[in-house]
Length: 58
Image (cartoon, rainbow, N blue to C red; front, top):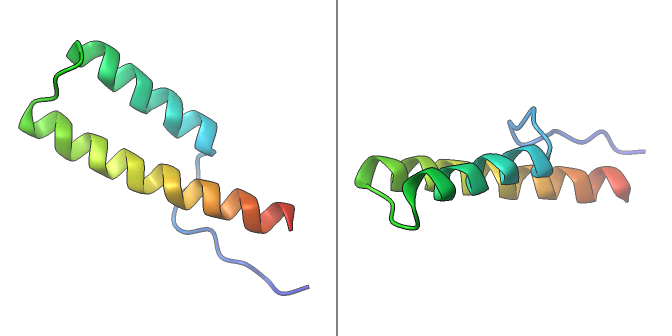
């Protein structure tokens, strides 16, 4: 088996997705500039977590 490296995300995709949902709920559907930056960071983290979970499943 080839060792894999998690892409820097210690949290699961589900955990990060929950944070994304909470951010949108707090923002009331409109993100400020600061919230947009957080959203982009969270989406990047979520994508890395999804890739890591797919690799682990394979």
